Amino acid sequence: MVARVSLSDMQQVVDAATSFDWAIWLPSVPGGSFSTRDFTFRCTGTTIPAVTQEAFKVEAHGLTFNYPGRRTWASDIDFTMYETRDQTTRNLMLAWMDFVRDIKANTGNYKASYAVDAELNLYDAPGNVTKRIKIEKFYPLELGTATLDNTSGLLTYTAKFSMDRTSEIAL
Image (cartoon, rainbow, N blue to C red; front, side):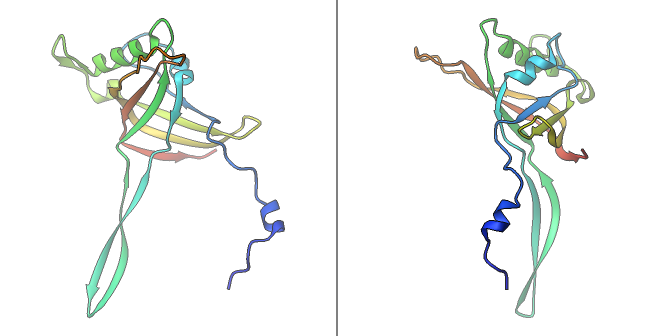
């Protein structure tokens, strides 16, 4: 039997992780001379990609046994990105997408050229990295709509990126 959680138990728990202490880092932005720092600070929202442990059942003699199957990863990740008056966010995303597949020239590049390994870092309150997540073979799929509605607000895009998988990087 497990004892109920006490005040003493709760006081021993370290500070909670926050949803605002994170940054995405890229080694380069293919397709142009854009700053990776520009990309980092324009991203204002995302999720930590899902990892799934598949399962399968074996049924025999009236019994069911559960077993673990393959591990699979989400195949894409979304970011909310804000825009500035010089339209750098839109220009960055479109240039990268053109580098992947140029619709005007009907050409493209190899994945080794347009996909980069990104890193999603989580921080604690003093600014120490508490988790490093490698996002493997990261490249843009979609630049979503931006709402222009005559209100006082920030112009933002939702951008969808493809990825092969994530992996944990030791601190």
